[in-house]
Length: 336
Image (cartoon, rainbow, N blue to C red; front, top):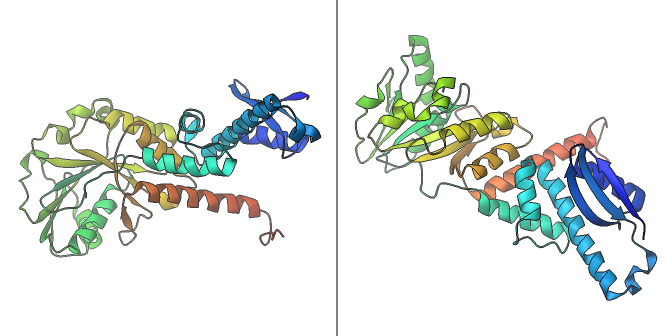
C-alpha cells in the first residue's frame, strides 16, 4: 500500500484531491493542520482488502473513522463554525458516532444543538424591564418594537412603556411612534436609567439604549445600566452580519458584565452563514433569548430554540451551496 501526502489550504480542498487521485474508497490515515493549511496522508484501497488480515481490517476501520472525522470537520467549517468549534466537535466529542460520514454529521448537529445556550425563561413577560444593548445599527430599536408588538398580543400584559435613554429630536420621535404603531404604548425619551420605576405586575418596560462606544466596550461595568439596582433583563444585540472578530469582541467585553444577561441575534436573513454568531454564543456561554430574520418591525421575532437555530444554520448553508452550484448556469442541472 503506497501512502500519498496531500497539501491544500483547507480540509475540503485536501479531501477533493484525495478523491480525485485515489478514488472515493481511498483510506485516510491522518489529518493535520500546518502553517500552509492542511496535510492529509491517504492511500488507495487495494482490491484484496476484503481478504486482508484482521489487523489490516482494524487499520482500515481506523482510517475510515479518521476519514469521517475529516469530512465532518470540513462540513462544520463550511457552516461557519470556525476551526476551534469544528475541531472540538470532530475530534474531541465522544457522543458522535463515526461509523459513516452521514452518521457523524447527524450526531454533530445534535451535539451542536446541545451546546447552544438558550434562555430557559420567557423573555417577554409582565412585570419586567428589558434593556437592549449593542453597537450602532445592530437593530436594537426595531427589535424592541417587535417585542412591543408581541406583548400587545398577550392578555397578561396590560401596559407597555417604551423608554429611550437618548433625547430624540421631534422627527425621530414621530418615526418611533409610527414604528410602535400603537397609541397604548407609552413613549418616554431622554430618560435616565436611574429614574426608572418598578413596573406594575401587568406592565412591560422596554428600554432602548444608545449605541455602545469603544470606551464602554473597554469598561462595560461602568455602563449606567450595569449600576442600577432595578432588576433589568439586559439583552446584547448581536447582528449576524458582523465579522467574527467583532462578534467575539462584543461578547468577550460584555459577557458577565451586565445583570440577567442574554442576547438577541438579528439580521439572520442578511447573511449566508450564522455559524460565526452561533460559535460566539457557545464560546462565551451567552444564552440566546430570541432571534429575528428581518429588520422591518412586521418581520418575525422568534423565541430561541437550540434545535431550530441549528436547522436554520443548515437551511442557510443549503441555499448558499445551491446558489454556488447553479452560478453561471441558466437553469439547475438535473442529476439522474
